[in-house]
Length: 273
Image 1: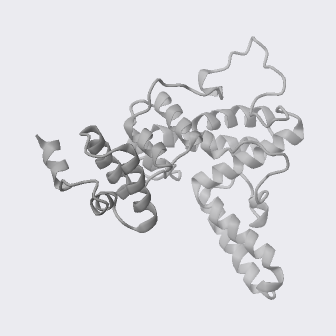
Image 2: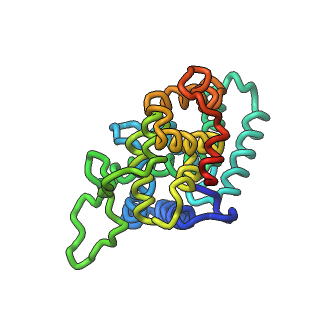
Image 3: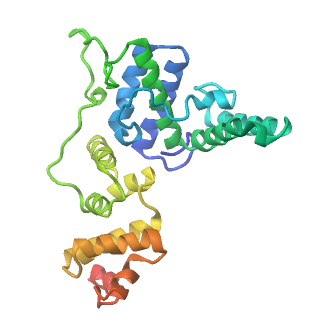
């Protein structure tokens, strides 16, 4: 998810930027119906950003309060507010005497300046706010507590029902098998592929931060090696774990462990033929 105004934003990013702004504006004016409607659409796109509800669990709380800004502040204003709050905190007294407050400001700055983390924070806090208002069911489901009148049809995108697909793309399957993503992330990718099928899967993966550019190259190589029967899924999972924890590329790990005898360059040669 890119910041508003960044170049090359795809359809999912642009839609999420509009929805995020709408969510925060509705939240700022206490528009319960607007918040629920937009939150459901965001949950449809990013179910991985809203963890299952646990009563009383609101993380660090409303982090906007820690830096003295409002929920609908643009990203640049949030960063500026964090810098002001940090400078003010460092100027007043001994930091050790106000350690909890200092950590709160640090958490606010780290989370609110990153679009995906900020959205996750907003959805969690908004859900608790809606529960306090009695506007959604007590289990924390982002749905209206009372059914909407039948005369008001709900657009397909508004539903939080999970979208099922017969099979997963190989890249998503590899991410899951290597435990780089879990069920919520898989569902997020499935939903996004359904909503915007024109966007390549690898772009969705990179945009969500599920893999780095280097990890993506290893995953694509693994897809080729698996299709050629040169390695097994279990061997791939071990080698990918090595790459993520031991600073060893997946292909190198496969060769060191004796699971891959061919040179990696053959991948490029076969792809050209």
